Image (cartoon, rainbow, N blue to C red):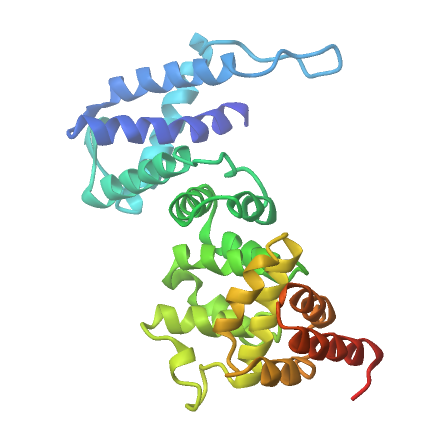
Length: 314
């Protein structure tokens, strides 16, 4: 079992060499490469302690060579069966192997993913989605997108999308917005999951905007049309959520600028509709807005609304 695991771990490097060689590689060459790689893997193992199982030999011993050749043949046969390489044999013994176009494409794609992951500007590729997104909060859009791509390249797409959506379900509105920004870097593979997320009230406005952006439109331009757009109530909830993100992350000064993006034409209408939007951070947003607004009359109205939401009054 140990040798099988070592061969499985070594095969990607063999395929990379085959891709770079751009031609047939002899069976003898593959065996030699495999022996070298397994020796490297064994050298990288941590030193065994007294309680550990004693380590195996550091190099391929003569007695293992026959099994190594047999297992290499098994691996090459499996790759040939799925169309990744072609085997040329003589008397049922492989003479040389060559990657097919499909195999070369697969290796190149994996190498590209590794290169993207290695370019992580903030070094968050091994972090959870929440930790990665929190690290991206201090980056400008360009480096943040590079970080998203690096993080995504380091893990399977399906689980990555699931983890990003789970992060978006949390209480932090900033993380919610950043999670959907990261999902834009995923693109079409995230489509089904985002469509399903549109059924969740907390994610619905973000999901609808993501879907519209993916399909080449903006639902905020079509608020009177049917499904797939933001209603005024959804737009109000989203406004409160993004205002909450600014408030919770010390950017109260942005709240006044944020008023320009409100779906209501006046602050009075905004305040009236915010009271009924059902967002859990409504009171905090109203109080922050009251503290930031320079107009005493509006400040008084906003504080009154915050008190009414807090007490459940009309």
